[in-house]
Image (cartoon, rainbow, N blue to C red; front, top):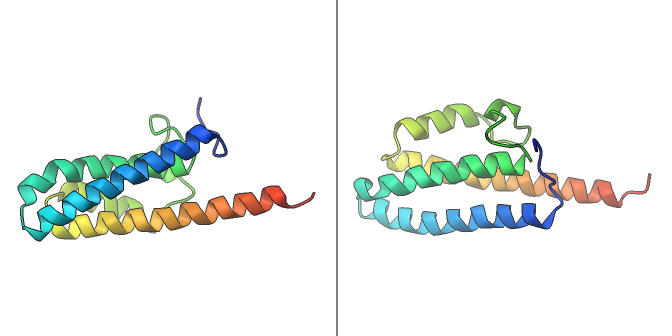
Length: 125
């Protein structure tokens, strides 16, 4: 199965699960970076990067194993370059802030697309 059905209950639950995990991760990362403990933040940053990639592909209804970031239609500006920076320097506070921004931007893009899809489906032909 290449594309997921973005209107299914499973899809909605998957998106909610990823975002919920991100919120939990973000709380812990906030604490570690506030305490300047980048060593303890590293495993969480790696998990958070994976979560972002899952969210990116999920919000585009694409299978992460079959597609690349370039195939995503809904994505933050310069996501490839920004993600490369984060992946190459996951211990930096700036990487964490950039990842948080990517999540926020992708959430907005996803919500916008969902609203457009709902409006399109309600419109009479």
